[in-house]
Amino acid sequence: YNYGPRGRDPLPIRIMTKTESSLLYPGVAHSWLCDGKLLRLLEPLAPGNTPLFQDQWKRGQPVLVSGVGQKLNPDLWNPQSFSKDYGDIKNDLINCLTGNIVPNQPMKKFWEGFEHYGKRLKDDKGQPMVLKLKDWPPGDDFAEMLPSRFEDLMSVLPMGEYTRRNGRLNLAGRLPECFVRPDLGPKMYIAYGSAIHPNRASTNLHLDISDAVNVMCYVGVPKDADYEEHIKEALKAIDEAGCDILTRRRVREKEEIPGALWHIYHARDSDKIRDLLNKVAIERGDKLEPHHDPIHDQAWYLDGPLRERLYKEYGVEGYAIIQCLGDAMFIPAGAPHQVRNLHNCVKVAEDFVSPENVSYCFHLTQEFRHLSDTHTNHEDKLQIKNIIYHDMKDAMACLMAASKEIQIKSEVEESVEKKVKESDS
Image (cartoon, rainbow, N blue to C red):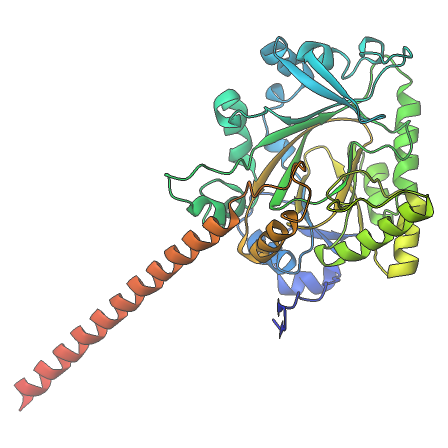
C-alpha cells in the first residue's frame, strides 16, 4: 500500500487472464468476466477460494460466486412456499415503474402475480404494475421470522468468515452484547422482472455503507405471457448493457437462467459519477438542492447514453454483470451500483464489515452526516465508530496475550538454560 496525505491509497484495479491466475492459484475453480476484471468463483464452499477472493476484494473489486443455488433447498425459495407461509401478512410494495408506494397489501396478492401476469395488481390506468418488495422482513430478525430459510442460507453462504454474523473477518460481529446490534440482515429483495420495460430499474443507482453479498435464490418468467418474447427482451437488454462476450455466451450457450442485470462501479469513482449526474440535472433545468446527493437519493438509473457519457467524459467504466440463478454477488462498501431485474427474482442480501473496506464504511458515515435530517441515511445505523473501537480493543488484547506468551516462554527457556549451565559447572 502507498500512503498519501489522506491516508492509504487504493490498490490499482487488477485485470487477469485464466492462464495467469491458474499459475498463482492452482486448484481453485474460477473464471474471469468483464474483460478480466470480474472474478467468478465456481465452487462456493471450496477452502482454496479465500486467497483469490481477498486479492480482488482488497482492490475494491466486486466478486461473483456461482453454484450457491445448487446447495439451497428449492422448496423453501419458490413463490408458492412464500405465499403459503406468509401470504396473510400485509406489507408495503413499490411500483418500479413510478417509484410510488402501494401500501398495506396482502403478500398473497404480490405472490399470485409473481409468475402470472393476469393476476398482478393494476394501477389507476388498469395496467399491471411491476412491483417490488424491499427490505423484507422489515424490522424483524430474519433468523426468527424465517428460521428454516435462515439456516438453509447460512449453510451455503460463500466466504463464511466474512459473511456469517460470527465470522472472524466480519468486524461487525465484535460488538459486545450490551450494544444494539446493527441490522445487517439477511433481508429479501423480491421484484417482478422488467425486461419489457427498457431503462426501468428494480433498484436505482445507490451505494451502501457496508459490504454486502446478494444471493439469487429463485428466477421465474410469467407463465401466462409470451415466454419467448420475455426471453428475447432479456437477451436484448443484456446485449445493450455493455456485457462482455463471455457473459453473453454464458446466458446463451450454457443455458443458465439470467435473473438480474447489475452495473457496479468502483467506490473511488463515486465523485466523478456525482459530477456527471449533477451536470445532467442542470442541463435538464433542475435545481440542485443543498444537502442532497444524486447517488444517495437513489433518483437515477444510468442508462446506455449516461454510461457512455460517464466513460467518454470521465474515463469511468463499470462492471456490467448478469446475476443468474444461484449466483452470489459480492459488492464492496461504497461501490455505486444499480440493478434491473430481467425476470422475476427472489434475492437475499446479507451485509458485513470487512477489514479491507472498513475505511470506506467510516468515511461514508461522515459523508452521510451532511445529508438532510430527513434523509434515510442521515443516521449512523452501522455504529461504525463502536465497531472500529471494539475491534481494535480485541486486536490489541490478542497481541498483548501473544506477546505475554512469548515473553513467558522466553523466560522459561532462559531459566532452563541457566540451570543447565549451573549443573555443568
